[in-house]
Image 1 (tube, rainbow, N blue to C red):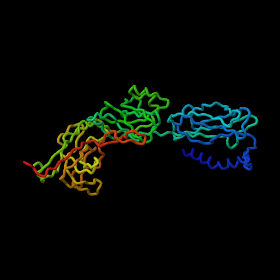
Image 2 (cartoon, helix red, strand yellow; image 1 turned 180 degrees about the horizontal axis):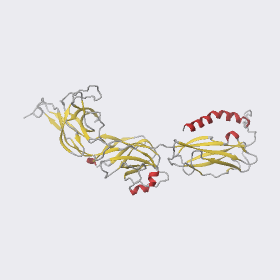
Image 3 (cartoon, rainbow, N blue to C red; image 1 turned 45 degrees about the vertical axis):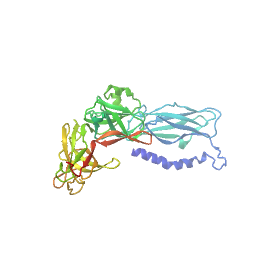
Image 4 (cartoon, rainbow, N blue to C red; image 1 turned 90 degrees about the vertical axis):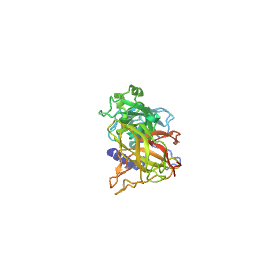
Length: 432
């Protein structure tokens, strides 16, 4: 890459010399700018950059001088200095090209191959004008051209998330997808094979040209386990091979990007019903509650990349339904693959686990309101006295379609915390 950049810098610095050297080709003193030198031919442009996804690139062979009354054949040659023919490119136009009578230009067409075969991010393809007949010569400073073919960097990211069995949720959300039209986003299990050959395909979908977007992939029937996401380039690839259910050699050859390993959980149960509290139920004070009880929690996960414990946090809910500050923490951490009923959550004042000396302060709910109990990956934290506080652990999330459209009119895919809403009603007194 450094050498390529230096070469282009030299070309840029020499450009004024090229222009100055062309003074003898053009009569700039003539008011009509009439060329009065010997006819010559040139390349345009002399240097260009194209993506490997460009499909077809062109270089113009242009006549310097008046149009001719007869066809003009121009011989050219090419050499892939670092580009490899059949891998990075194919020149579709044979030499010589013909500038037809009454015309000034003709294009050389180059097929750019979407191969992904790059060591330094780009390769170089050079062209040279060799001859153009007895009366026409290639312009000395304009007879060579370079095409820089640049790698198109595809990408995909996969985060820890859950599929919600309560809602028949089967879509895994792949984020940060950069792809080209026709590419595939494919989900597999991790593999010891670097190219993933023979690895079972869990799900896939074909996508368009994306830049850091989110993509949902249906993985119906998949176990709660560890997975990775791939971007497979569509060019020169038959998508039907994906239907075989494993990564074939053809598929592996077109593997353009692979995410890190991410744990995928299943939410088998998470239920919290509305609660009412009064002084007879909670002896700490009339019309107050110091705990809430989540009815049942069951999170499934068989992998090794993620957490095998979760904690339950209690959060306030705003007027617009948004989830606010945490105000509670479960009395114990919960292991995955177990059913927990009547999970007790202590009500606390908000605590910043990032403080140098965080202190837990027990609190109460003394006004009726809506709350959200949610699962966090990993165990709860501890304050300076060893008391449980909400740790800065990521929430367990699942993917859903939010009823909001982006600029293209598509529904926005996003993450949403796993949990349940409920209303805690505080009664001032017991009528009995």
